Structures are given as C-alpha cells and as structure tokens.
Image 1 (spheres, rainbow, N blue to C red):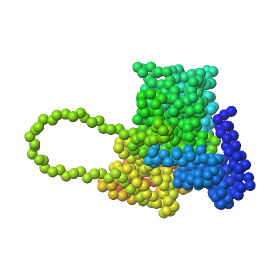
Image 2 (spheres, one colour):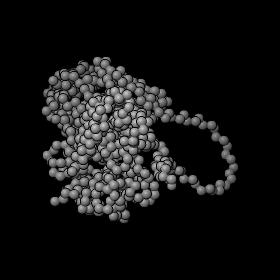
Image 3 (cartoon, rainbow, N blue to C red):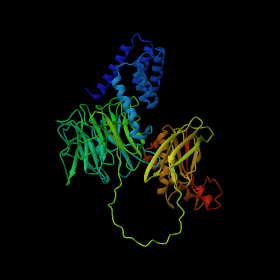
Image 4 (cartoon, one colour):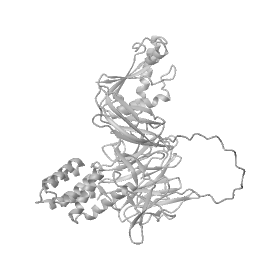
Length: 630
C-alpha cells in the first residue's frame, strides 16, 4: 500500500470519526461541511463552518475547538491557534489532549528558532500540476535544480532546473542527460559545483533506488553508482557537506524505523562506513531529507515520528559533541515552516537569508516547492533533557578567545594627539514607505520584494500593499536596496533605491504599467553592440524582466519592434532594426517563451519619436518597443 493511500485512509477515518462524534450534537452540519472544506484544502471556508458549528453549540463541543486550532495551524495564524487550543484545554476533554499539548509546546518554542520566517508560493509557472520538490541552488547561483513529476517525454519523476534571474526565476527545463523512465531526484552539489549527488535507478534491472555521483563540464556525465553508501535497500536524499560529509536516508536493515538518516565521513580520501545518527534523531517511523547548516552542527530534517502538526514535519537538532549520536532533542520548526500536512526538504541558500521547503500545505495531493526567507534567533539554542526529565534550553554562544597575560615594558608616554571627531554610527534599520498605483491612478494590491547586501550577505524581505496601495516596511540598514514587483496583469517593475546615510525614512511612489491590448512599452535602455544585433550584457537583465512578465501572464501575445536613428541609409537602418527585433525574439524563445506568442518587425528610421537633432534625441530613437496584441 502506498504512503499516499495510507494517508488518505487515515484522513477518511478522521472524518468518519468526527462524523460519529458529532451525530446529534448541535452544529454537526456545519462541522461536516467544515471537514469537507478541510479535505479540499479550503481552510478559510473550513474555519468559517467550524465557527458556525461552535456558535450553534454555544461553545459546548470541545472537538470544534480542537479542529479550529488545527485549521488555524493550516493558516499559520499563531494567535488564533493558541486561542482555540487553550479553549480546548479549558474544556477538560482528553480525546485530543496529547496532540494539543504537543502543538502548544511546539508553538511556544518556535520563536527560539526563527526570529521571523515567511513562506510564499513560487511563481505560477514554476510548480506544475503534479509533484515538485527538493529545490537546490547550484554553487554559481545561476540555476535552481529540483525534482518533478510533471509531464515530459520520460516517465515518472525527473530532474528539472530553472534559471535564476536578477528579478525572479525562468521557466523550468528538463535535464535530459539525467532523465530515464524510472524515478530520479536531485540531491546536492559538491563544493566546486562540478560534481553532484542524485538518486536514481540508472543500472539495468535496478529497482531499489541508489545514490549516484555525476560531473559536469558542459553536460552532465553518466551517473556513477556511489557504492560506498548504497545497500540492497533504498538510499535517497544525498546531502554532501563540504565534500567531507555525506548525509542520506536509507531503509537498510539495522535501523530504528522505516527510513533512517545516516552519515559517512571522507577520511584520507576514502568514505567511511555509514553510521546511523542514532535514536535521538531517528524514530520507529521515518526520517529523511537531511540538511546540515553551514555551522557544520545544526541538522535540519523531516520526520513523521517526532511530535508534529501532521504527516512529515521539519525539525532541527544540534550536534553537541564529537559523536554522530550525540544530538540535542529535535525541535519542530513550528509555524509557518510546518503545516498540518507533509512538509519536507528545508534548504538554505548560501550567503542569503533565503531558501526553500517542499509541502503539501495547499491541500492538493501533490507536493509543491515554496520559497522562504527568515532570520535565525540570536543567540541560537538547543534543547536537552536534564536528570529530572525536564527539557531545558541552552544558548550557543561563541566566546572570543582571551589572549594569555603578557608583561608589557614601561614606555615614556607619548604626547597626546589632537582629538579626533568620533564617527557617527550608522543606523541599524531603515523604514521605507510608499504607495503603488497603476498608470490610470488606481491603487494596486501587490507583493513587493526588497533585497540588498547586509553584513556581506544578501538579505531579502517582502511586504504587501493594502487596499489603498500603501505599504511600510522596516529593513536592516544598507546603502541600497533592489525592489521588484511582479504582479499579474502588469509589466514587471524593478528599481534600485539609494538609502540616505543618516537612515532617514524613504518614501516611494510607484507606478505599474498595465498590460492592455494595443498598449506599447518603450525600452530605450536595451543596448546593442555598434552596428550589430548582439545585445550588450548590461541589457540582459532588462530582457529577463520581460521574460518573467510573459511567463507570469501566459495569455498575452506581443510584437517586438526595432527602431533606429537617422545615421546611415534608410535601407541599412531597416535591415538593422529587423535583425535587432528578431534577436530580442530569439532571446525570449531561448528563455522559454513559446514562439507562437511572439512576432517581430523592424521599422528602421520611419517612426522616430523626435527630430534626431542631437545625440540625446538619436539615443531615444534607437529603441525597442513591445506592443500587446489582441
């Protein structure tokens, strides 16, 4: 029996159990409707039905309080979750008391892991209608690799990748060199980015699933079986750390449950016999998707055996000593990292506060990739059990080394120097406020992304506008932030904001351009090499913004037109404008835009926007235009 079928049966038992419990109780009709919405992933509607059920029962049915608590977990609403769980505890009912106590303990601890975490869906064109999971960024930061069950000319799950643009992601493409008609899944990269570790069944007759190593120059090499880690059972989710450690999940004999997490160390160039991480990490159920944080001691993983909200949850544990079995008590990451359904594959993008998780939280029968951005709580901590059986929290504080005492010879004091003006300390935070409207003056409700370099790492955060288009966000201070708005129905907006040195607030007024039929968008800053149709490198990000706009709005078709100034003959400029327009179309097609959506035309010098009186006017005439077609 498949795991998905087992979960479906469990859900039906839960629904049936609630139906039996509520027969004859006030509000039962609302509760059953609420369970139907829950099963479909329509959590807000489910909450409304259970609120009606609770109202009809005058608050006398504890099961309603329990389910309201769970449904607010699904909405990642901590305050309402805690309110309804508390209502359940106050009722004295014991039916769900163990689960409720676990939920409360998890939520009370979650702010000791993340000071802040946001989870958001990937762009509409990124995930498919089938399963997508396990996103990993290559060391160059150019591509994100992941596994998908989406349709292709190969059967089952295959490895895909999407290009990472300055303002977002490109359309996913199949990695054909690694595709077969069996299941494959991406694991992790070597430090140099040339090698990587994957899961698959690449050898004839193999069905159990093994770990393989691959290398790439221009294309990926044939997968080589990593026999050092593999057994006659399933080995999967390979996660390499610093080319010296390999974590993976295995169902091999001698473990504690169905799938356990193991580690192998590379010593003198040879991988050691894999070690089970022991009974603190592994349970009688399943543990998988290991990820070792860059401190080399904090392990993130998924488990359906440790206390959680439902199905697989994400956990973290800290390696306290030198043994691979010496771990702190695993801690559930809490909300919003986890949901009431399966959550797996925590991944942190190096040098950023961003990453990915994979989750069934939307209520569909397929896993989806979600983007995350977060701030770890400082100082970090871990949990252990003392001699009385009480859980205690221990902060991880890296102490500065204290130099040994030294004798310093007495010297004649120097003449006092002229007083130096003390440096004015830079502010810690900056406030950015503003309003987003469209080119007709109407407010736009949208998400805004801010990213900048803070303490030598890329920091990203998001805010949303209200019904009046207004927003406010507080960000760590740095000299500049890049701003991106990719709202469906509008041309992608990107800008760079310079932050005042004194940290005074920044106010922005942003105008988005609607994508309307026959509307023309002028791009004067798409530059070509002299007398050529080759686009200059500094113009590629502008074209990539256009790619993202077209990917996010798949219903629109466009005409790309090229225009020139009056230098040269009319015949020559006509040909040049046509070649340049076609070069733009070729770039868009290469980035995944269907050629059926694109037409191109050159107008030479026949449609100037001014009289070409000077170089500044000529520059405005040397332009590319994009017109939305019917």
